[in-house]
Length: 392
Image (cartoon, rainbow, N blue to C red; front, side, top):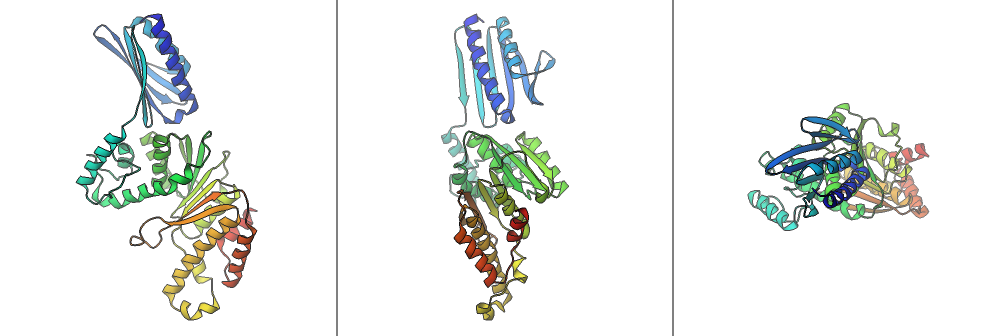
């Protein structure tokens, strides 16, 4: 190749080096093909400890991106053309060069192609909803297979359709809130009581590959077994922007600014612990999908409702509403704009609420007065109040 083409290739490679340095966690691989006459010579590079392990002609070297760029540009002198596929999560960048032309293209699946492929899934599996899915089966195939939602032949499993609809609706409910987060820094998201982290993996995919946001996920759970399972899933998927720790949230401290705190189906007061943690670290966003509510059920009383609360089912339902209502009120008192929505249909589970809170920066003393008044009226001392006082 001539010097003019080689210099252009160098410039493009410098750009790829900058992309790698800015966010190496989404790098999947670099695939190089040199041609000389009718012969092809291939090289492959993969991520290894912050660098690239590049194999060419049977030899593997660990190179920094600038060294790899220099090596490839130097090798161009010996060949007629070069084709470079730089692959990231959700994006392919292709550089092709010969003595006449040097081109770089970024390729992603077109929306029309996605819609056509999704239509085939809908027709094959009629209980998929007639909607524009956020997590499209064709693009998220590796993720959905790892989560066990998709079969090996690329079909949503019949017994996982409800789960698929749930995770997609989860993303839909969070999209508008997450769009308000800072765009020029890495978004750090902490999942409290993460379990196997299915929804966190989905959110990682959506933010990284669909929204092109730089993000990092931290999963906490006291169970070593589920933490190890989550680590394996992250490794299988190549999601290097995730870390998992077997620890209790009250023992965890992060060197990073945590923008989002998530608590999904944490039992009873574990939700309160997560909310208190999010308030303490002044998280920009707090998301909670509460599970069981046992604490206030045996604790609260309200004389005007004595004739109603003698029926256990009424007392249990009011305990649920009181627990989540007071959680929402405390978040407002601590300076959050709060919305409460139905996460999934109540026909599937009565525990179907999602609490979404966005930091405003201004505490609300009137809301705190209402909270304290409710504590007095219902003879209740919620765990959230205790945890916040312990942190303070």
